Length: 126
Image (cartoon, rainbow, N blue to C red; front, side, top):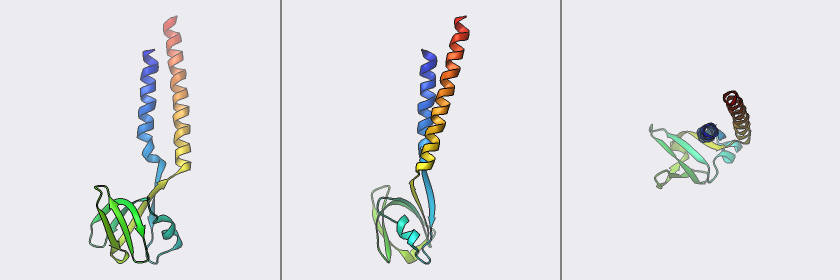
């Protein structure tokens, strides 16, 4: 029974460590603004914005218009940023492909761990 608990803990920790891999980061081009930028810069998407001044702002996009981007930082501060002041933007989004790969790896790993636990238990019973 203790072996099962240990493997269960390993599987749960693996899931927690793998969860950030379910998202993908995309570099968004603002010069010139493209249709891809319009798809990426939508409300609710996480973004890391590098300003021409050298500062970085990380947060969630609240709104975008033709001349600015409004972002809520992790501390809850809402800030409007002129597109001309932005050097680069990276956004993150959920990736079904990465998530499926991680779930597959966890299932295969769990099956392998269970198999090893059963083999280990059978050897100690003899």
